[in-house]
Length: 295
Ligand SMILES: [Zn+2]
Image 1 (tube, rainbow, N blue to C red):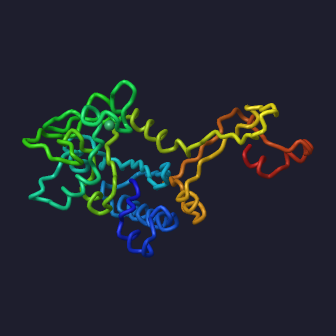
Image 2 (image 1 turned 45 degrees about the vertical axis):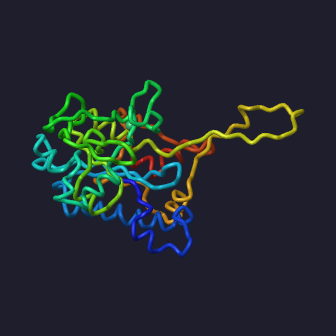
Image 3 (image 1 turned 90 degrees about the horizontal axis):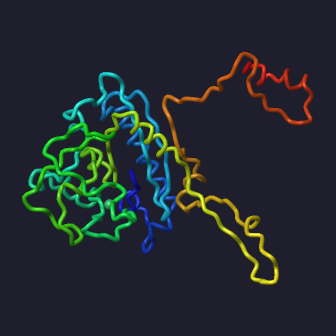
């Protein structure tokens, strides 16, 4: 889920002539309110079914817009195990504008990938081999199937007449999978996918826990007579965008996990790791209540 700077809650609180990029406080507050609302939808209103576990992390794009990754694990009895069950949650086709014009407008605005590939070879998703890193355009298919890899192949029927978006002819192979209810309610880029395979679950955990961006930089003296020790002068540092700074100053959660899981140390009886300061005596260390408790 990516923050949409055109959300009315953001736009109506801007002063005349004020621009969104100069109000990271407002962007953070509104995005946080949306994250809280989607959590309520998932955990309390059970829009996907009863939830056994949920985790999310908030990240910040280079330009500074916040986005969140959620992983939802449903309870037994609510798990999505069949293509029919997938179709109830995830959609990857253009809706009929005569049936639902609002949804059609939202899909054409937020849910079209790129385009990239032969339509637009210089799009940012294109890799050196000339392939899209997100594997668009996707295969057109009349039915949702489980797929050979970890993600299902969603129903993407052939269209009689493709539509024109940003000057390109677009069909269902360019649609980013979405949930119609969430797209209508939140009106922002929100990719919803089913991950039923352990490989996909492991990937998602790794992806949503990958942490913040880092940069390497150096500060050099202009005096060329001074020998520069490049290794010493490079710093490993973090990149913090204004909206991340605002998010952290407002003390909003960067990630949450329910139920919380903590990693326990695995050790033989009486052989756990113990940390201590080098000025402590053995007696002080073994009588430390925190260390005693962990024995
Ligand atoms: Zn692409």
